[in-house]
View 1: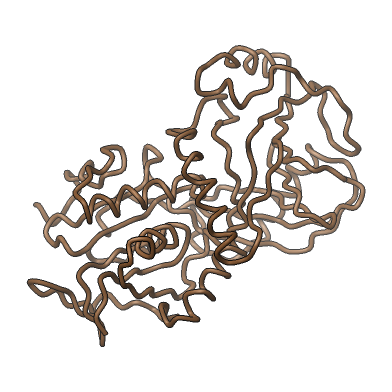
View 2: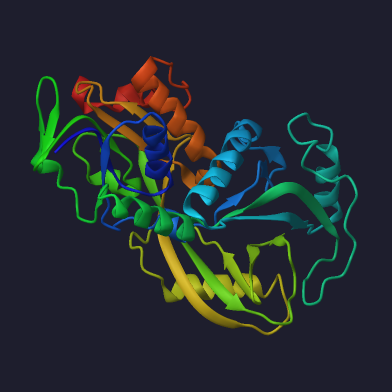
Amino acid sequence: MKVDYIIVGLGLAGLAFVEELIAAKKTFLVFEDDSQTSSLVAGGVYNPVILKRFTSVWNGTEQLELALPFYKGLEEKLNITVDQKFVIKKSFKSIEDQNNWFSVLDKPRLVDYLDPKLDKQNYNGVLADFSFGNVNKTGRIDTAKLITAYRTYLESDNLIRFEQFKHDDLNIEKEFITYKDITASKIVFCEGFGVTQNPYFNYLPINEAKGELLTIHAPELNIDFLLKSTLFVLPLGDNLYKVGATFNWTDKTSEPSEAGKEELVEKLKKVITIPYTIVSQSAGIRPTVSGRRPLVGIHPEESKLIVLNGLGTRGVMIAPTVAKNLFNHLEVGESLDDEINIDRFKHLNKWLS
């Protein structure tokens, strides 16, 4: 089999890049083995405001301008609904918290999202002594539903193989690469935290942050917004809510833990007071990068090897933008954004030592 591209990994990064290939009528084959689950278990919230510090997300507005039509197009293509729009209500913990909100309302990159009028309404079972601030133009992409449907879509045309990609079996020739029965011009690694096992890109400074989430059933809660407090409470419909998330830098497994559940339950006591039952618990390893910028670019010695990784907690916003930038870089010579280019880590590169 001869293709233009091999793609390793079909999370948000791989999916977004495949969409670029399809639009350009490039041929490809995807390998996916479910070893990395961060995209599948992600909350999937898109929000251009960092609510912990009331600052704007890096290129947040520009990312959303590309991402929202991107997901709408996928909904139409796959005949599914994955974009759930809602308001985020930030629960203030103090008057100082409120004052910090008001101090940034007129900032150019925040003015379109932060509501200057506080929400002083009482919501049954929600703890909020100092009102709420509304963040508008936000929502959630159901990443698990999207990726599952997309895999089925690719499978129907034999464009995906559900098997482990073995780096040792990759052969790099002068004009092309071969892997088993496949010849390709380029290979793009979208492996998430699995890139640490990739002998060509394992020099990149990627860290693992385990995140755990609960899905709860709370019939008395009855909120249609995302509640952001000590943790987030995200409505899923049918009185179900996703609650999260933890950040664990020491547990390297992607299995749900009792410690993670206990942490979320304890934090939830400070957010809601009504009874609930835990329906399920999920976990995944987030690939995180110092400076919170993705890892995108071409191997320093082997130009046919490419990486697209490290999207972090805001992958639903970032993925379409960086995938398009990478595709245009490879195919039409567009410059990679310096902030995402792996060249910024040349000093760590064993291939150049």
